[in-house]
Image 1: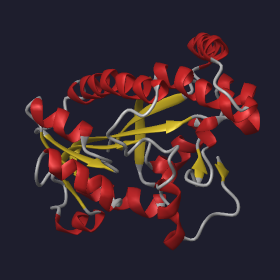
Image 2: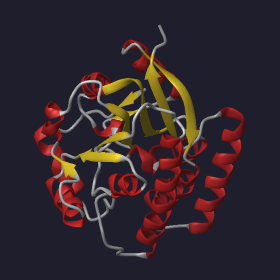
Image 3: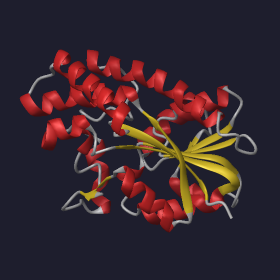
Length: 256
C-alpha cells in the first residue's frame, strides 16, 4: 500500500474536485473523451448491478457510499432495489436530487441509518479518497446485515499499466487519491476488521481509460492507439497474474 505525501488538509480537499479535468461528478459531455467516459460508465453500472445481484444477500437494500451524482443509485432503484446514496460534495448531491428527489444525502446522514440494515454497501472508486478510510469502513461494517456484502472498487498500482506509465499513471490521481491499494493491502485491511474477501472482479474497461489519460499526462496529448495497446496488454497479463488495472473486492463478515 502507498500513501500520497504530503496529503492536503481535509478542509482543502474539496477544491481539487472543482478541477475542469475531473469529470466523475460531471453531467455533460465536453469532449470525445468525456463521451467515452460516459458510455463506458453505462456499461460499468450494468456490470456492477449484476455483481451485486449475484451475491445472494438477504433483502434488497443498497447503500452507495460516495454516490456522486447518483447514477448507480437510480439504476439500482430501477431494478427494484431499495437504494440510497451518501455523498460529501454538495454540487453532486444537488445534481443527483434534481434527477430524482431524496436520492443522495450528505454523509452525515449515515448516523440515522439503522445498524445491520443494509444488504449491500458499495464504494465505487471511493476508498482511495477517504482520509479516515479505516474508521469509515468500520462504521459501514456496523450497517451491514450478517449476510451482507461490501463491494469496493479501487485502482491497483500493481497492474501492468501502472508499471508501464509509472509516475504518469493516471490512477494515482494525486492529491485526490490519498491512498493506493494492492490486493495484499486489501486482505490485511479487512482482516483487521474481522472481515474477509470472498471474491474479486476485474474492471476491464479501466485499463483502457486509465491508459488513455496516462498518455496525456506522459506526453501532453492523448494517444488513442497506444492507450488501446497498453490497456490490452494490461488485461492480457492480468489473466495470469490477477493484477488488473482496477479490482472490485466483494467482502463479507468472517465466518464463525
